[in-house]
Length: 54
Image 1 (spheres, rainbow, N blue to C red):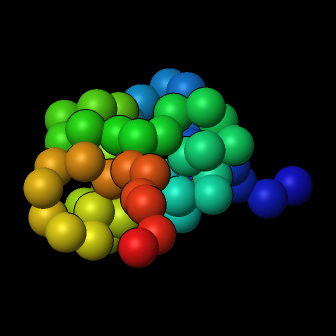
Image 2 (image 1 turned 180 degrees about the vertical axis):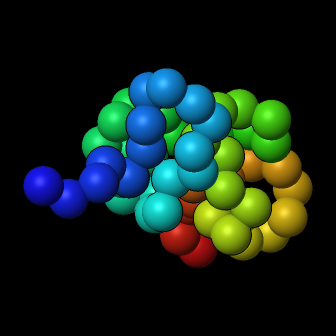
Protein backbone atom coordinates (compact mmCIF):
# COMPACT_ATOMS: atom_id res chain seq x y z
CA UNK A 1 0.00 0.00 0.00
CA UNK A 2 1.30 3.46 -0.90
CA UNK A 3 1.94 5.93 1.86
CA UNK A 4 -0.57 8.77 2.05
CA UNK A 5 0.39 12.29 1.05
CA UNK A 6 -0.46 13.40 4.58
CA UNK A 7 -0.72 11.58 7.86
CA UNK A 8 -3.38 12.53 10.36
CA UNK A 9 -0.89 11.72 13.12
CA UNK A 10 1.34 14.74 12.58
CA UNK A 11 2.28 17.78 10.57
CA UNK A 12 3.66 15.91 7.54
CA UNK A 13 3.65 18.28 4.59
CA UNK A 14 1.45 17.71 1.58
CA UNK A 15 3.39 16.73 -1.52
CA UNK A 16 1.10 18.66 -3.86
CA UNK A 17 -1.70 21.18 -3.87
CA UNK A 18 -3.91 18.55 -5.50
CA UNK A 19 -3.44 16.36 -2.42
CA UNK A 20 -4.15 19.28 -0.08
CA UNK A 21 -7.30 20.18 -2.01
CA UNK A 22 -8.47 16.56 -2.10
CA UNK A 23 -8.14 16.44 1.69
CA UNK A 24 -10.08 19.70 2.00
CA UNK A 25 -7.10 21.43 3.61
CA UNK A 26 -6.19 24.05 0.99
CA UNK A 27 -5.24 26.81 1.26
CA UNK A 28 -2.67 26.22 4.00
CA UNK A 29 -1.09 28.93 6.11
CA UNK A 30 2.48 28.80 7.36
CA UNK A 31 2.35 26.91 10.66
CA UNK A 32 -0.67 24.79 9.70
CA UNK A 33 -0.21 21.02 9.82
CA UNK A 34 0.60 19.89 6.30
CA UNK A 35 1.98 23.26 5.14
CA UNK A 36 4.79 22.80 2.63
CA UNK A 37 6.88 25.85 1.72
CA UNK A 38 7.54 24.29 -1.68
CA UNK A 39 3.84 24.81 -2.47
CA UNK A 40 3.98 28.51 -1.56
CA UNK A 41 5.05 29.91 -4.91
CA UNK A 42 4.98 33.58 -3.97
CA UNK A 43 6.39 33.12 -0.46
CA UNK A 44 3.55 34.94 1.29
CA UNK A 45 2.93 32.20 3.85
CA UNK A 46 -0.13 30.83 2.08
CA UNK A 47 0.29 27.61 0.10
CA UNK A 48 -2.15 26.26 -2.48
CA UNK A 49 -4.10 29.47 -2.52
CA UNK A 50 -6.66 30.07 -5.24
CA UNK A 51 -5.56 32.38 -8.01
CA UNK A 52 -7.35 34.45 -10.59
CA UNK A 53 -6.42 34.39 -14.22
CA UNK A 54 -5.96 37.77 -15.84
